Length: 133
Image (tube, rainbow, N blue to C red; front, top):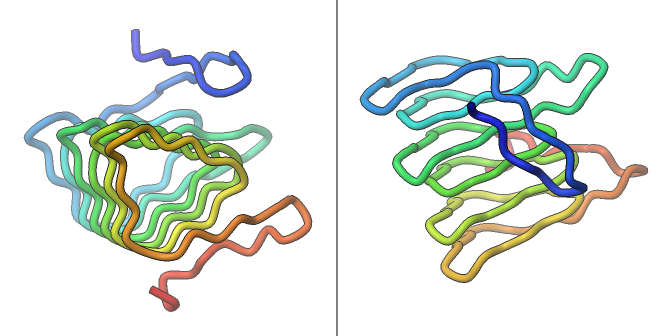
């Protein structure tokens, strides 16, 4: 139901949903897949244990805080530093206000980043910390 193909043709599994009209305050930690349609005021980070995690942020969603995940499919707004260890896909309504570290990036026309872009390869896996933002 919540599956979406990610780069490489694999199917992203979405295990959890923060729905429209829902506001979460504090740190959100997840494994597997998380879709956010509401609002999060706090950091969002994956617990990558034996696999890559996927965060999907819809066009109605907003995150105010640091984000650290394996894959990110963004069509909403993130205000804070973003660290993506694998693939960042920014869809047309995507907006990031903060520095971004990534391994691979795909930006659709209309997507906006207000901050630094830092490419990180496998040998450099040091994400942007929230203290730098």
